[in-house]
Image (tube, rainbow, N blue to C red; front, side):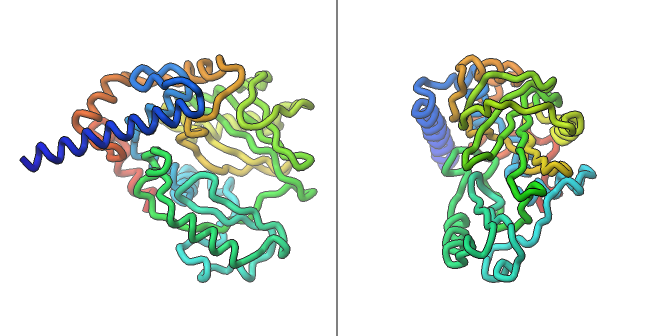
Length: 318
């Protein structure tokens, strides 16, 4: 009897999760997602949120564990300086730090504040915002199961800046099956944020996503070959990851490693870009894997198909 009750509750949770993911998708894209037969990139992100959890996703969803992973890969020299991490901002050296720096959380997306100078350093406001971050269960909020169970921490890092004080270009590198296919570059200029999409050969793609395109265009980065080689090394055997880099005109820095780009909820223009990127992502047996997870597993819990890499992920996450 208890088993039947538990099983019913588990299946009801699946129903609720699938419905919530579909509703969020319809709200942003204006159409239903093909969850069990995903073809578009945005649909495959929804499938991953529901059924595609593997141990390394939890490593990459934790910014502190990601740093340790990059170090373990022999690339610690590409990380910005981590000044402090913990749960109580009052115990940090934030009041005595030199500027600029970044306050962020380790367990969520879009939780960061750039502190450039004393004028932008209101400690009470920073403390209140940091406390709010720690109260949020990001994975539950967004149905991105890789974030669930991550110990919530605050982080302070040195801000990466160009020699002239401007913000560096950010290159977001989309890796599929160990090969770089797409690079989305973010440019901050004149108070605005612009973006450009290129192939790995630096052929410009007339696509747009969150930001307006940067009309002047970007020359081929001097370190493009290095960016590609590092991205493919960090991706390893994962079927898809996004590796972010900052180029401050002096050196490269590895930023985040992203599992759920845009949460799959950002429409692309033209619409066929979604299908083009989706075709690069070879998702094996999505329907049988989804049905097996529903039949035998729980959302957010590693299943039978996810054993490979469990021990290494746990070690990196400590």
